[in-house]
Image (cartoon, rainbow, N blue to C red; front, side, top):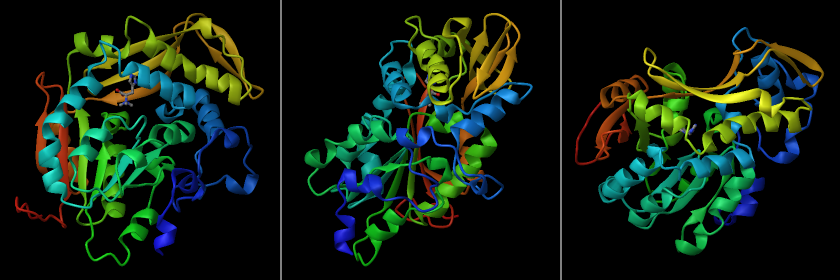
Length: 367
Ligand code: AVJ
């Protein structure tokens, strides 16, 4: 049993996560799925299906997860260093200030599971503060980026098991790695689910509640959930953050068309589309669009899609939650607040939550 746990990153990469659908990687991207795999019970996410269905809708839209191929992840990494993109900077500041109290709540031997780990840079602050963390399970859809990002971690934290999982974290129903790590261990560390970056904002509120409920199920009754959520409502701050003057966000958004051209034999003309960020004050979300500069016809896998001038493909939502709005959302999913933190500009909150029924610890919040 113990041997099965001594996974190096490269071994872990080959161990499929049950319930997580598929392991993602460039090798899979071009394969066409056999017919028996398509249907109501199919759980495998498909770029091809999402793009073809998304472009056939009256309001064209493609789920934002597909922005993160290797190049997309690199471009997002660049966005985090852009002056007008405040979320990463502000959240890092909050995590820095909160790390020790969060570590106290987590206790010794924590098992850290990170959702959408990307470069894993923020995680370092958490790992540094934790009392002998037992394992780090970063989950990311971009398999190549994931492995490159965590390669150095085992040498930095003695005794830390690093088990990267290349998967779409929204589809995870159970984490066998977690069960394995905890089996037969008397001194069980707490499962700390780390979900920074305001990624929760990329889901509709309904989907966010569903995701938080699912996390509660696989993380167990004594989990601690740390979520970063952006509450900014000022368009004068939001628009430059999502449409930076240097054009990094535009390149990030347009890279989706590059990916479609490459992986789905399409003929999108990159010069015929432009990036646009909009703030919808009603639904409190920033939207990213790829707007057609002229009327045109595009072919994807032999299918034709017509665009009128000004028509767009909606590629991302970033919902912005006030402290109160996020707490209500979390409560609907069965999570209670243990701690909350906010940056000096009152933009990004870091929420520390515990399951309603499994609450423990000195704060005595009983559900
Ligand atoms: C890290 C996915 C939350 O929505 O702010 C950045 C992605 N999109 N600029 C965000 C993003 C455009 C980012 N998330």
